[in-house]
Length: 283
Image (cartoon, rainbow, N blue to C red; front, side, top):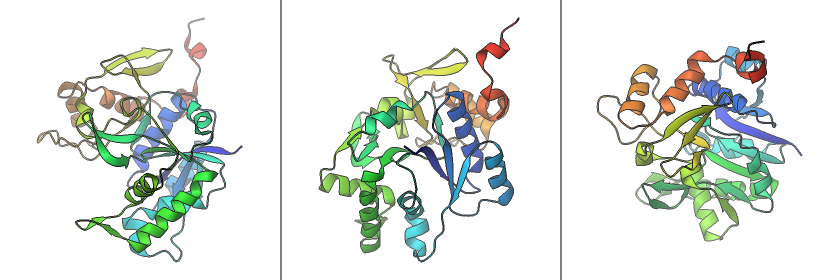
């Protein structure tokens, strides 16, 4: 069975993708890592990804209209529909592994998708699930095709909101009562105000362990939208200004994710991150 952990990358998300890949290596996943290049990924960046062990696949716009392909993020569905994989774990580039997620492959079984519902504080955000983490097999590709058709037929939602790949897929899953496995958002998808939930950080066997206040482990993390260290935006994403972002995540929000991101970004390279614990022991 061909399985990949996959993300879509252009020049804008390249640096964040490198940190994501380091976290993937840190937790020793057994299935290969794939990058779909869908727009403006420079050749030197493509080559570097290949040099560090990433599989790079091109996605081309071809006869897709500009609005659907770019503005509605249809390039994601095009890449996955054309994919040669039996199962893919779809990741946004602005995410981090905090545990080995190979077990999600086995959990797919007869489900069409594995998804994480979106929550604002303790309230579920309607029918939405966030495709920053989604597991899909061949049996789920028909849903992606229908999502593309929905985007073409209905490019906007009520209030002139673009009917993106996520919105259209969530609607189809709800309308057809599709069999999906939903993961716990507290373990996989802290979004919006839930970035403010205090988290504890420890290290065991050279790997980061992040826990929620109730002791459950945070296994995956998604940085959502931009941080302003001075205005204190409620909607947070890891900023390119890493020093300021690190301070705010830790001191204002009791959130160690900035420390982890910075450590992987600055203090680890693609050679040493693969070294085993035994190689560091004093002989």
